[in-house]
Length: 211
Image (cartoon, rainbow, N blue to C red; front, side, top):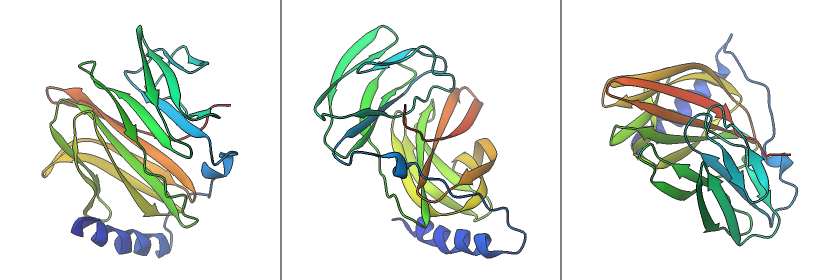
């Protein structure tokens, strides 16, 4: 954990205790994990891309983020994004994201999952043209996730329940922002930054498991 992140935790906790603070209700992504030996795989690609994870089809990803697909027998998993097919290998109990960057480069990343009863997991993916981006919390005046490279991700666990605004920053320059993101206990939220040449968007979506 960085010094900035150590600063963030008590500040966010203080915000949660302030009178009138907007608190999010609890949820439970991890309570939906029925088999601890299964693996969970999702895709993050271009908005509205088509994807296939094993036998689960996503005809249009909308925001570009698919739900996780439970793989009962961890091992080789067949993935198709658009017209590109590949096979990846996952281990029991793991959460993984197959990320397709704007230039078509694809990487299987391991997702950090804390499942804390008092925290929410936050993941940040950089799919922009910026070589390194921070996820910043204005209310805490601190970086939550520092230095995420293109096509890569970073993660942190934050106190919950709480509702916060977030910004994607390069240094002191804000590229994009999003307001009022709910953080719920035993749940997780994924942020994705996209864009080029000075035009950027930051989205946030609660993690889910495909049914």
